[in-house]
Image 1 (spheres, one colour):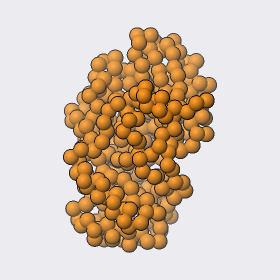
Image 2 (cartoon, helix red, strand yellow):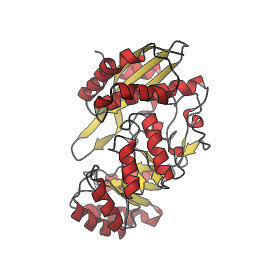
Image 3 (cartoon, one colour):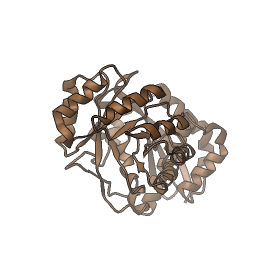
Length: 359
């Protein structure tokens, strides 16, 4: 089997809910759909998301200028072999950033091809037995009112999801946490995400206050590259530390595990250069008896979470239902894994036609 052709399609996709980070408010995201064909007629898809069209354009350019020549007519042995071949070819470009995201798109398509070639859903390639995952809810943005947070939590509870993660990093954090605890009680598992907001001293102080509210974990309290400082914090914090979404290789995940800088590791399948890089990180996390909590993209991460014995799945109700063939909605507190061959994150033709950006 050889790789015979490739194509890229740009999409502009409206979000179901406004994403309100500290720096941007997003009503839509841009996506790059990468299509990879084999000479046997199998097509693999790899989907990336970004907040700006400029980001998507750069990633698309990386695919075509760095990798397309190497890909076409390349003998396809396995996704891992292809990933390693491309990584070695352009390793100086692949330490982080756009080229790594381009590699991720290729790798996702390669795994889609492999699973379709073996006529199995992706999770079955990895001998993952369960056909569902239990997600936790995500919201509670810094600018949300109490009523908006209450509605967010209620939305998840109505779907059988009893774990919710909120953002912290503003003057009234404790008031907001207290409100959710008072409103929903201790039956709600509550986690917090600081998005790298604090310095070391303030992170220590806030961690003590978080313990008073039985917070499950304190996510990204410090700059994610400060692993030795995270390890010091993890030793002193009464609340478990979570990190990893901004780490772009399994070596960084290894350092976190070795230094015991976190209990919950949250690699992002795109930032890790695709499923191949993500699998390497998951093995390290599992071998360390720690917890995997993939960052975003639950549509794909749900098929990968079972790589670790202990795991969480992050859910944000972002993408419209018609973007994918499979139904990734939460029902009775669970997300069912795709049953069709491939990774299941398939953008159908009608969605492409609806959301495609014209050049």
